[in-house]
Image (cartoon, rainbow, N blue to C red; front, side, top):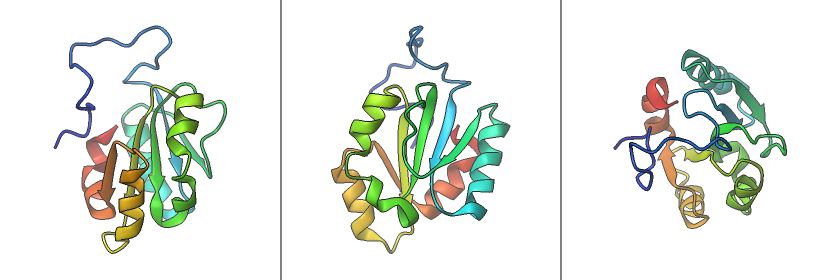
Length: 131
């Protein structure tokens, strides 16, 4: 599974001027887990991306390349998340993750239209090369 390129985006497509550069856009992390946030921040910064920890999609997140949702601490943002992303950061890739035992949260995220939903273990394993 290639987590770097959405399956509906041709590999040779270049971003328009209104889209963030795929190599420099911000990573917005929606989570209440400050300890794990440091790992996500390190992965973002190692990829040359700015990082922002937030409780919801910031209105000024237009340059975001990724919105990552920790379903174990922010599952309530799933309802309406895709609409908020479309409004505030339409070019961001949305990724959600939860512990594998939180099946209902994983299912709800998929049903909400989040394009990539992973278990926490899958997310953690992919983190080093994700952004």
